[in-house]
Image (tube, rainbow, N blue to C red; front, side, top):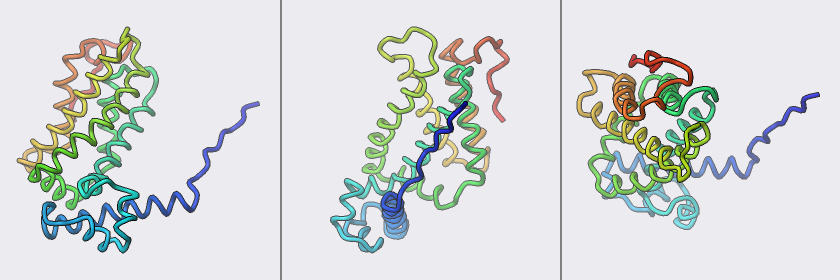
Length: 219
């Protein structure tokens, strides 16, 4: 007899913490969009969210971290999709198809997110924090890649390179799209970028047991 394992839902305390973190992020974004990211302070963000400065510090180390919380959530969701891909998929195929699935779920891009992405590019402090944030997520992604890597990789070098290449392809695609959003969709640019990047991983870019034509074509 199979026993179903139920994952407990977050309790009231955790839901409140999640709501407070989201409120602080949204307050930071609102203020940054209105006044510029370099003009806002932690105190202003806390006031905007209706909490104390101490409460802000319980959730974020600085205003840059609060501003980037949305990006962290989105990349975290993408990593979850990678983990959920079929076990028979080779690492780069799983990454590519996860990106495809991610943008299908995302649907039409939120104009506020687009504006926020442009804001990030214009602020050196935010760009530096983004590198730090993405480095932590890159390690999580490398662990997910390593789980499905059937080639010898004792130091995890290949998994880490693959995760780094994937994250770089995603970031470059976004920057190219922001420069000319009317020329192609972000999803198309991501798929093209991943297809080009995947060539460097040889057979790891192919589904196990499949031929060269198995690599997902850009949409």
